[in-house]
Image 1 (tube, helix red, strand yellow):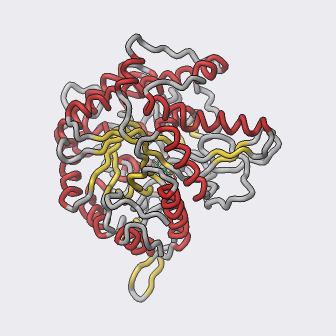
Image 2 (spheres, rainbow, N blue to C red):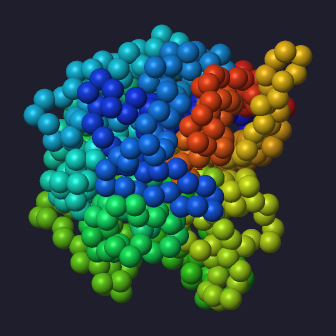
Image 3 (cartoon, helix red, strand yellow):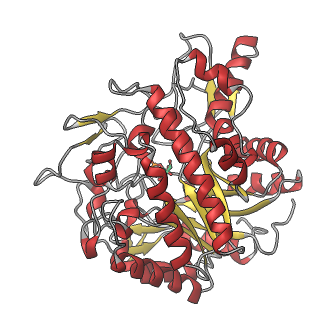
Length: 488
Ligand code: BGP
C-alpha cells in the first residue's frame, strides 16, 4: 500500500451552524438554519418565517461549541489532528449581512478559536459559507438569487482574510456549492426561502416554489463571488490557498444499457463537473448551454463575469464523499431512500447505512482518480463519515461507546485513499465529517452521529452536553500517529 505524504492533513470537519449554538449571543444575527426545525429520516424538517416560541430548533444550542471550543479542540489535539475544518458564521461577523460595521465580538471569537488551533499545532481550514446565510439577506434580498450578495460576500470574505491573516491560510468559499443544482439547495446553499411559514424540506422531491432559473442564477452569483474571493485571498496574503467544496459521489449506470450509461454521465456532470469546471477551469463546461436551453434556464451573466471566473481559479479541489449513486433510465427500477440529490436506484452490491446512504469505499478511489485525471490540482477530502445511532454504555464506572461500524467504514475508505495515492493522485488531506457528534444538516437530529467524541444530547434537545471518547477516538489517534500505515 502507498504511504501517505509526511505533511498529510489528517483531521476532522464541522460547521458553525451545526455545532456552535449561541445563536443570538454576542451580537450574532439570525441565520437561515436558525429557522429550521428538527426532523428525522422519515419526517422532513420544516422551515418557518419566524422563530416559534416553545418549538425546537436544533441550531440554537447545537452542541454549544461556542462555549466549549477550547476543550473540544484539545480533544482533537489529543487525537493528533493536523487540521481542523470549521466555518465562520457570516451572521456573527455581519449580523444582517449588510451592516455598515462588523461585529467585533464575532471577529474576536473566531480569532481566539484559530489561535487555540495554532497553539495546539492544528492548521485551521475555514469555510466562509457553510449553509448559514444571515436570515436578513434571505428575507430582504431573496438570498443568492440577488446579485447584490456578491459584493456583500466579497466584503465579508476580505474582512476574514485580513483579520485572520497569519492564523488561517487554507480556505474554502462555499460548502457543497453544487447543492444549488438540486431543489433543497435553495435553502441551505442559496438562502432562497419560501414566503410561507412551516414549509417541509423534503429532499429529492421538487419544492412547489422552486424556480430552476432562479436557482442556477443564484449559483452563478456564488461562482462570481467565489472567484472574486479567491482573487482577494491571494492578493491579501500570497500564502493563502483557497479551495472549492463540492458534494461528490461516484455515479454508476444501473445496467450496461447505453441509456443508463448516458444518464450516469449526465448525472456525474451535474453532480460534480458543472461546478468543478467553473472553479478549477474558470469557465462553464461546453455542455452547459444545452443543459440551460433544454431546461428553460435563462442565465444572466454580466459583461466581465467570464474574466472574473477565469481569474479566480481555486488552488485545490475539496469535496465531501459519503456515498455513491446508481442511476437507472427505467423508472420501474426500485429507488433507495435517504438520497439527497436524486432518486437513486438501489445498488444490489452495496450495503447502506441506517439512514439509507450506500456505503462504497471503492467508489471513493474511483472518484479520486476521475477528479485528479480531470483537474490535476491537489485534492482534499473534507467530509466523509458514517452517521449512525450510537449507544452510550456504563462499564466499570466509565461511560463508553463501542462503535466498530464507524471504524470499519473509515478504515475501508482510508484504505482506498491509499490506493488512489498509489494510482498517482495528489491527495493533500482528509478531514472526516463530524469528529464530535453534532446536529445533522439533513434531518436536524443528534441521533445521526458521526463523531469520535460522543455528545450527550438527544433529538429533542435534552441532555447534559457532556463529551465522551468513543472507541473510534483511540483508533483514529493511532491512524494519525502512524500516518495511515496502521489502520488497525
Ligand atoms: C454535508 C454537509 C454537512 C453535513 C454532512 C452530513 O452535506 O456539508 O453539513 O451535515 O453532509 O449530512 P447529514 O448531517 O445530513 O447526515
